[in-house]
Image (cartoon, rainbow, N blue to C red; front, top):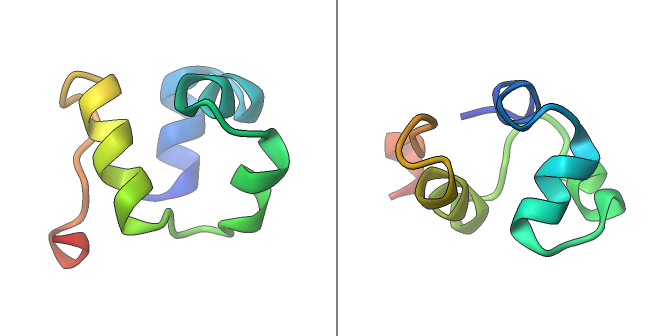
Length: 57
């Protein structure tokens, strides 16, 4: 998953950060690729609507 998919799903970078309990500036530091641990968190909180990349496993 990339950052654009996650932001689109949650509605904004701030809402994504809020859902993860982190600051928006941390999300900005990711660049395009979301760190593997965060990908799995996003998969859980999105109820599998967003899937972690296979390479993240």
